[in-house]
Amino acid sequence: MGGNSPCASCKLLRRRCAKDCIFAPYFPSEDPHKFAIVHKVFGASNVSKMLQELPFDQRTDAVSSLVYEANARMRDPVYGCVGAISYLQNQVSELQMQLALAQAEILCIQMQHDQATIVDSGGIVCRGSASPFLLASTIKHLFVNN
Image 1 (cartoon, rainbow, N blue to C red):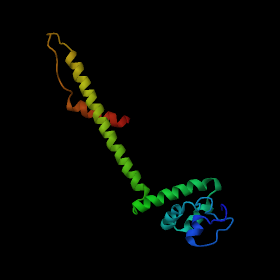
Image 2: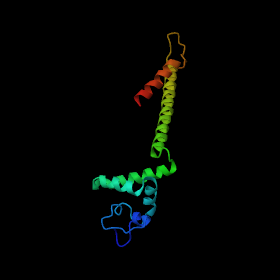
Image 3: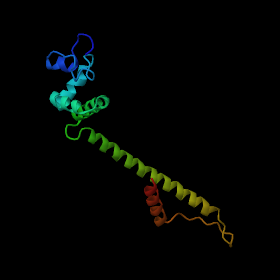
Image 4: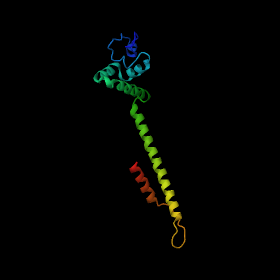
């Protein structure tokens, strides 16, 4: 406990902050919102039990995770941070698809350019486009390798 001021937990719960208060190092009185949101989502008793079960060197990270999850649960009570992770994974998949399509389009343009420069034995310039099968297999190859 820093000075005479009780930690955010003891202040919110209206109790005397003991010298060995488990919350004091992680929930300072200057940041009461941090404990308030964790308390609202998880409860002080549960947070206390979690902290007591962890080694001292892991508690700071655990409190950070609890605060993050509590904030996520306030925004999305059903999924919490899992909802945010799922959303971001979907965005990554969509961007990978867009990248694969752009890479396939570049490959098709390169192939068309290469075909346009080939002159057959009759002196005729070949101008063809890539086959749909080739485009589909190119996209599949890009997805498997990314």
